[in-house]
Length: 408
Image (spheres, helix red, strand yellow):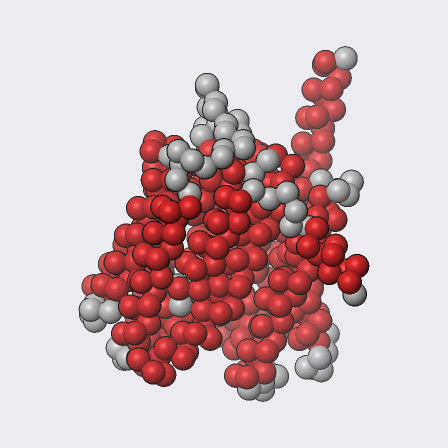
């Protein structure tokens, strides 16, 4: 046990202090954004909106995320990651506080769009910051540490949010969300002064390549959008499936979903450290992650035994742990040849697009063709994603062989 614990700690060695500060800031920010898990419930219970209205508001949420990711990339390339991160976080705090005063359908659609526009401009900037503060050999583990912070934040946030709603109501939730964003900003200004921070891998490109002309990257983004649609079923459709088909209680559903965060916290960093040193390529590992995630839904059709839900959650969790860090690393590596903000914005947008279509598609399919057929269709999407990633891997290997042949 002691050896396992020591090996776990070793997987964190070598990361810069700036990366640890970024992880803490991310943890505070993600634990603070507890409005998001309760947004639909708030709109339904407090403001008495219909499901149709809530659907349109969530679409505005996704569109704001797409626009914010694109804008964040442009601003990062123009003004630098630090200014974008500071202004995005600080402004988001005040916007969250202001959201509680909106109560009409149109005002909330506009309000949530603006909140996500500002909030998600942070995402491309933090990817570029990670690139700057990480040594090349530590990139993937740095990304994984940020993911750990995000998962811990998302685990603590909803629990804390439920307590705040009970004691202070939804108004208290908006206030706490806003204040935590402002606190995270002040901490960033204190510990990540760009004049004092040690930049380990600053990339300057004389003649940057546009991400839009990088065909391999654009195909990769298509695969990531498809993977996002599959993965996001676990944040909407699957919980209703647990309730309606397997008759799980809210407590049992919470335990099952909590298993995901617990496994990521325990296993992701050692797993990524081990895979980094393996012979497998990033695209090859993403391919395997997509297969595991697709299988996690397919096996639900094999039996009515509720224990299969645990197996499915295990498959999805390990698929997620493998696919996300290496897709992040592939995007950052590809971005070194062009405008980093533009590349990372498009990478973020691929998942924002999945948010627009993924939840709605899954729920509409279950209503039209039932759960079993929905899992077959979603597994088919995962298979298309895996095929694209496999094809990209073959294409890149061919290009490398041609380059090697030309230089010899």
